[in-house]
Length: 444
Image (tube, rainbow, N blue to C red; front, side):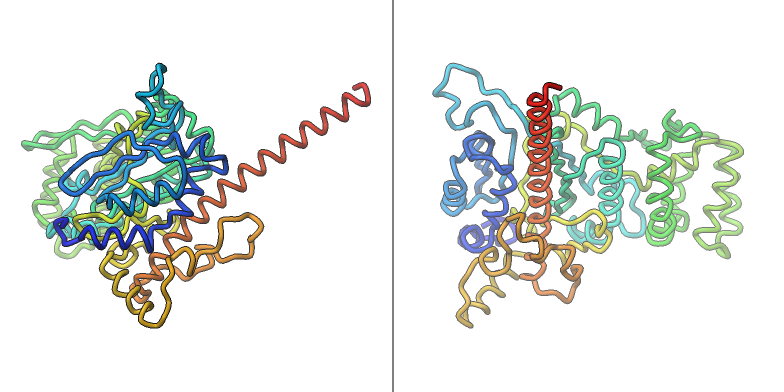
């Protein structure tokens, strides 16, 4: 058994009855014959006992599904699409070369420990649930930059099941990016913050020189300022708790200014709201230490990317709809615009909850998988079919099964968007060919 009691028997049942194999296959095949992409995708299994199986690949959806039911992996990772099926790499004289993969991002709550205050503590999963706003901010900020600065359209966010989230960018040109291009995008989006260990004063990085870069200014105006006021000041209470305040003042590079702020807050803090404290502090910093107020705001709100995950085309990333072995939770997709409403404790059901509800349905004579029972076929002609946007937002009052179906519908909408994009491109190409043919016939 895994540490939370997720048994292999439960995993076998989950892969047989609930894992959305049809929708996952429709994504990874990208509307092409399996031999083109799906069969050349690296799939990695982690088995109970930390047995790690890399460079697996599967010729078809049914073959992958059979392997999931037989092996019952506690984790599934997807890697790159290679020039040949990874499992056949020893059969050919040519080297195994990665050809394409989604542009991916990984954000972990552990990287936010230094900016937590009142909401810090407890078990890792409870701490993540209380501090989910960091992940919501990261999803919306990342989604905005990827769409507006790079023009990407097909972006999937997935809760990792315990301490963070993943992002998959599946546009065709994103999948074709070189390692150098991936690294450039990751570096563009990432911010680095100095360590404030041992009481050392930090220096304000050049990125926070005024005026801010347009990408940073946009993120600040649309997302980060509101989060800083509502969550960081009022819920984390970083200016109210003594140690948390010291951590903030350590970010002020001028000792005299930091001392002045501290004396004022010690004398007057009891009658000031968190917003009023910040207004005073911000006014002092703008005069004495330009850029420091922005630095503090970004340090406490901006996404903390693990850029090494994004840089390499052959880097593995956990599949959506895994069951996390330490929590039993589903690695559930969510939509960036609804990220604040996505509460993992409610929106990511556990395997035990799903089994219980499935058994209740079976007792009533219903014995079908989730996709057969609830999910419309992946087809563009069914535009009137239900979608995640037409369903009620996730809430604590929904059953685990409804939460799970909602997550599958989000993946389905993502796949339908990819298919629409593909057929639109085919239509544009056909139109160009028709125009060229007409011009040739008319001697133009």
